[in-house]
Length: 323
Image (cartoon, rainbow, N blue to C red; front, side, top):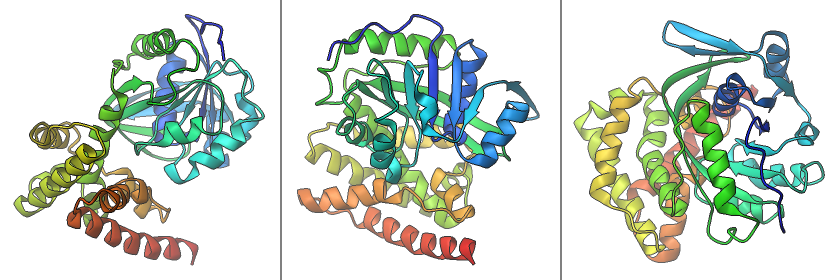
């Protein structure tokens, strides 16, 4: 499908599933002059309509006005839709987008996991891109986002979706949009490797942070926990390599400790879900590694154990929240 070029600036951007990550990046784009619509839960939408989005950083912060909506139909005018829903909701969200999305819109997945863009692309004919997200955020109340570390993206076109329009031009303009908003956004020639790199880091941090109710810095300070994290990294790299994605285990172990230093005060998204009694994305993290490892004949005892324990903890947390 031939697509007209994206506007150079400003763009009309919709964020579907605007929790902490979506609200943070949406607020950054809005502050840079783009027309942004955050689509999220009613409690957040009401607060944003009243007061805008507050981004808190340490003892300071800033505020920006954006549009907000509960109904997915609010994407109707968007040049670009950023999808930030939880991984289990990806396919349903793509179907919800389908009747409202402009034919010339672009879609970018800012989600955990390695196959969300492909799942979106299986439903939607528009160009779909994948972004790897490195940011520490959590909701500090309705309409209030606490930023605790980093805030950058890596963007690229997934295998199998490259033939939809001029991907190179799209990626240049989307990356430039983020860079102008103060968000570092390099373009990856192999987004699969970038996605598996982030998945590897998630497998090192997310489950243990949830099970131990621990911030990254405290995890990395424990010698025994560091050993488990390294084993999770080694297993994930082995599965990626068996799946045709060549990662460097040593470099990823080093990246794990660098991330712990850079985001020492961060709880993983899995830990935040457990704290709130919400379902987690662990099936798309350690669970995906365990399942893919079983398919490819790669043993993953650490990832399999972490996945099982988080599922056990999740079931109790969700039940308690409903009680």
